[in-house]
Length: 137
Image 1: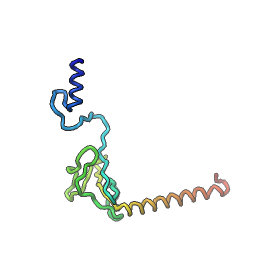
Image 2: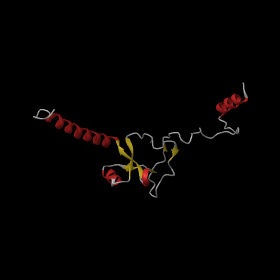
Image 3: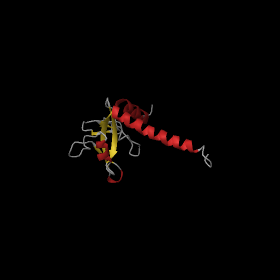
Image 4: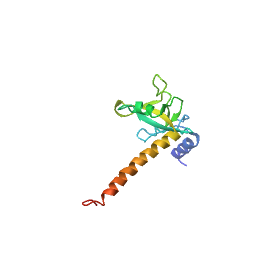
């Protein structure tokens, strides 16, 4: 077995780096995609990231969403550092926009989804109803 193969085998078995020092975490290449916004599941709640644009956070609060303020493991890193002064979990996203991790009770979320689905069904029925009219197909 060559020296290179021995070093590679040792590194894989004992989690040693090139210098022979033990690693704390699995190495992630700089250009590799990373999972930075996946949030954990909370029983009875649905979690969503809400961008702070166009009054979306205020609308979410009116829709019974609440800010998540507990420590969670989000994606590849601890989000404890991504907090504003109120203790809300935040993340900087594109163009200087801040996203807030918010939660809603699962029953309210399901109600909202049913209402959205009903609107889609009504639109589809309107579209289908038109094909019976002259000039529509």
